[in-house]
Amino acid sequence: MPKKSERTRSKIVEAANHLFYRKGYNRTSFSDVVDAAGVPRGNIYYYFKTKDDILKATVAYRLGRIANMLDTWSGSFRTPQERIKRFLEILPNSATSLSRYGCPMGSLNMELGKDQPELKTEARQMFELFEGWLADQFAELGYAGRARELALRTLAQGQGITMITHVYNDTAFLARETARLERWIDRLAAGDDSE
Image 1: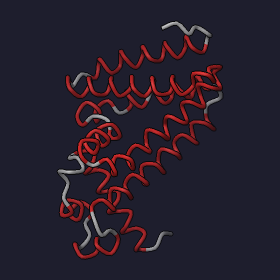
Image 2 (image 1 turned 180 degrees about the vertical axis):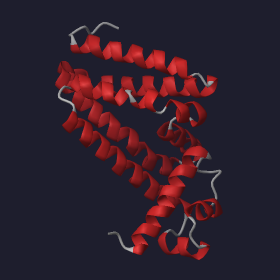
Image 3 (image 1 turned 90 degrees about the horizontal axis):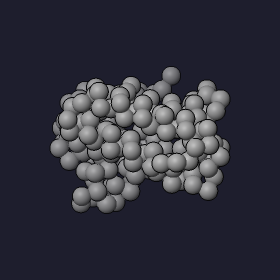
Image 4 (image 1 turned 45 degrees about the horizontal axis):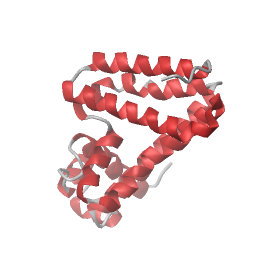
């Protein structure tokens, strides 16, 4: 069982993760995090000296969750085609939150990229984790020479779908475009590399 200090730190990070997604990093104050975590204000400084420190811990938390998820998929699905399609299921499985708030990774990177490049470097690691995993899947699918390109294309299309879904609050668009991406993966798995 985790110690009380570990549980308190986890509560702070989970509250910050929730707020950074729904409000944005820059619109979330230390007080917002304290209130959402339900910890005394003075306690937060024991764990985090600055809001940037909280962001770094939040990114580490997200990276851990992503890595666990990818490991599970790698062990649960037999073929790279099945694994890539499981990745695509993130879109319809998260349709409600994506239509309301956008992508948690994309929106954070966009926000930080405007004038906080050092923090964006932290947040970019989430994309890099997905990119590497997807590239491995495309290489195993038979596209080793283009694996990174196909991984980035998949991420870019997912981000575009998410953005339009968010802008128009259109989850039907999300479902249609996800199905189109799944058909593209099926064609690649069958050896059809046409656009």
